Image (cartoon, rainbow, N blue to C red; front, side, top):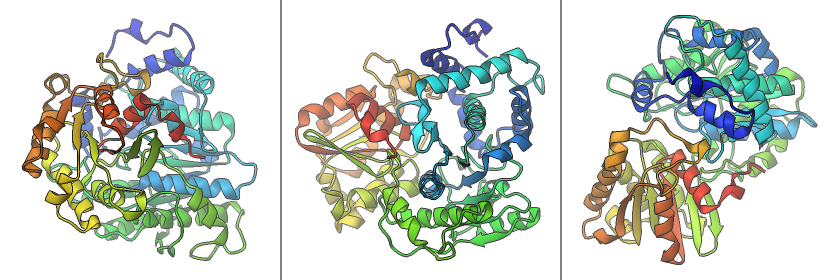
Length: 492
């Protein structure tokens, strides 16, 4: 734990709130332990969160006032949450719809939105210090090993609960961070509805984990008497049904909606939109706010909000002068498959010819890059080797924001292994993997660099290029920050 002096507030400003929040980040070793646990962390995870909640003045039953739609899954939980929020906003006239998601791209405030807009800096600081000072005033923790201030994601979850309760939201779309059963969002005794998007062996999976064990963890968000929804799963669906039956939750595999224009690109988004439609329908029925055709597979009044949905940094194209940025935070094998399909679709306006890529340390560089190229080649009707030749430049950078080695405050990442960072070990492994996958590629045009600003500086003189940024949402957010793409962050 950092010295107590560092934890004392100097002012009540937004920048000071971010400084204090960053003292709660876990280091690389702790993050790796969380990943290996599949999001379980420890047997005290939920009990500790309940006690933190008590210390800021609430009981779990208070969270029922938030009217929660709880969403988890391996793939598509963020997109499902975005679709759901947009539908509910269109249906609850004059209402306040809260949305809690992670991670953020450029500013921590993006994680906590009301009617699509992030909390302002003043609002974030106000609610942050109210939570921080309540924890400070009641420092007795549940156990000797429980820190006085919760780790980063737990603190933000407490902040979201406090902000949404203070603002009197009419509905809350609550995205799980990691896993389900042991996640810090899993405190609400009685959500209105809970849903699970597609399951898969994602980047948190380790040796011994199976789809069945992942499904059991995700199914931990199902609650007694609360409608328990899921998309049709390739595997693990029976486990989800068993999880629902074990707690007495009515279980439903949602139907696929017919093809309709969606604000989020990629064929896989129809699966996410289908879950969002079912979640919204169930919510509106429970709250007595139902349109006349609510029982249709796709109610007519849901069509426009689905088409209007925006989810920054996911399959997003942003033109900027001579450069067209193609942004997708895909960071798993499954999501990189979808990214490849999207980036080489004929209707994206053109294929990428520059790549900026990063992934967390210890991951399989060749597998991830190979997946992206194979999916793109299949979509474009060519081979991965031929597709690789269409690139002018490939850049592999860390998630450090600036060339001077500093992060923007909101983008500070204590989870980066300092030894890996100093040696550019991950970036060099990615460079080697790219050259192995693309024999004959000009090695002078493959870069391993220490910051996002280095990468953007390489792109700028290249002239008219289409730049695919992928492998990490933190990377996408950093590029948006450094390249000046903040206007693309809106969900409006």
